[in-house]
Length: 461
Image (cartoon, rainbow, N blue to C red; front, side, top):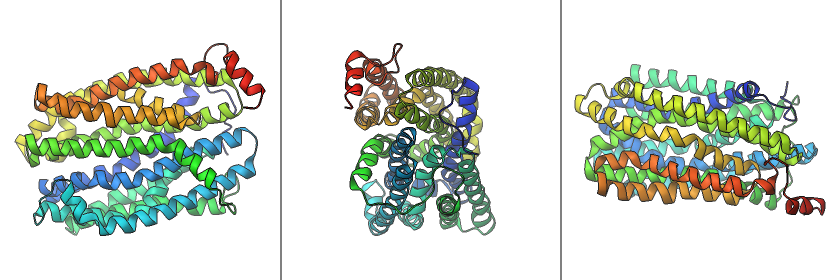
């Protein structure tokens, strides 16, 4: 049965509704985490550093799926809230086809430009690290179109009222990836290519099964129909979801900058330590991202239905949930820094000590990360891609980039690990300003729409 998005959600109901999406995000993160575990323990820290070096470039390409999924689901959910299901299905079908087409073109281009990309990211041509980075990156291009679809379907499953089905698909893909990593790398000894092949198969499952589901299933209000080519629809979805793409691209660029700084200050060990931190941080950030993505269609639906009371209820409940989760995750980060780091680099005492020390500083960002992510997703849900993109742009390409450049000059290596915390903290201040300033425009403040916004709504503007 599809979940009725028009109903009132209590705090517990909201958590239950978003749990499958959170789990989807966590299992998606498992692709990289499992690869990192097997590559580090069976292929060594040079191969691990190579994967960490090239992966941001892969994620820049894959961010198209996040853009189409979040921006498209907000548009589709708003259309559903307006009561026009046939048009919502046409939009949905068009956007999925567009995602696959763009993914295919990016995969072809990525394959041919992977070696110069590895060089540009700092690997010395002819070195083992350069060879491994280019090899892993090229193999990721094989399944890139399905990886992009997987990202898009994470949002569309929620909009279809079937978050549990999306969760099951990601579980299937994640379990397949884990088992095949064990088989290909741990048993067959195929090393880096084996880890990449396991990820390829996992992504084919994650992006392929939803294609079959939405082509055959008619028990939900979303399924594939013959689409009408409407560039305006594609443009609106991409513009609205651009903030999520900006976030992913910017995070990848920040990762690249991190690697440059760490290579300069520490060397290969610094890149390996940063990779270990990012593997485990993916789980924490997946919880925040999953909640933000999971609640966005609800906000979009209520916005389309002009139910301002429920919009306000969703907002305040979400801020409370994220606040509690932020404190819990910060404490877990401090407590689990050593055991989580040991999973990946217990074979090297110096590297383990560096990673644990860095992790405890980096974990401060959990106090601000959830609010920064939710704010961007909140404005995407309201179909305000401009504000959402601005929050994402400031968070990553301005605040975090500036911090990772300036703070090491003041605090040395510790400044690198603290830069994300500073960036997210500043983002929270900007996001709060936008939320307060635009509350009357969208009606989620007490009393509903401002007089000016109400007049515009009555005139059909």
